[in-house]
Length: 98
Image 1 (cartoon, one colour):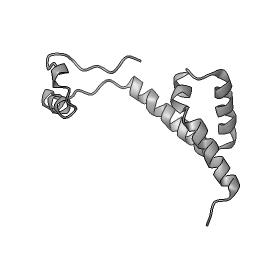
Image 2 (spheres, rainbow, N blue to C red):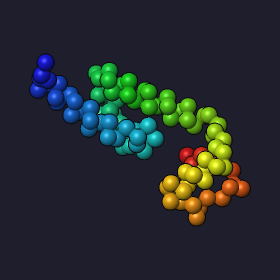
Image 3 (cartoon, rainbow, N blue to C red):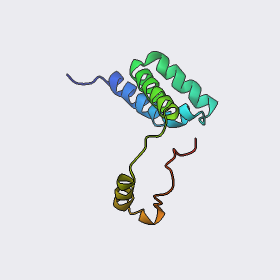
Image 4 (cartoon, helix red, strand yellow):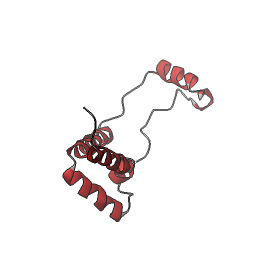
């Protein structure tokens, strides 16, 4: 079954708005674009699901405590990422500031 031109247009519209979803959820997007996204979501269930799921994921991440990572695992991670000069085993890990 091939996509109709309307389906293609809808898909492109979704892509356009989803590119700005991070800024939308962070509250840093212009009011005009926020209004456009909200109007789009009012008629697009798929985008509504994506935004709601991502929003809940971010909320859970911010509420949950940081998991403890064993020093050996941290050291291996920093080594793989070529960040060993920045690794300090005596410092506790923290989430990045919001």
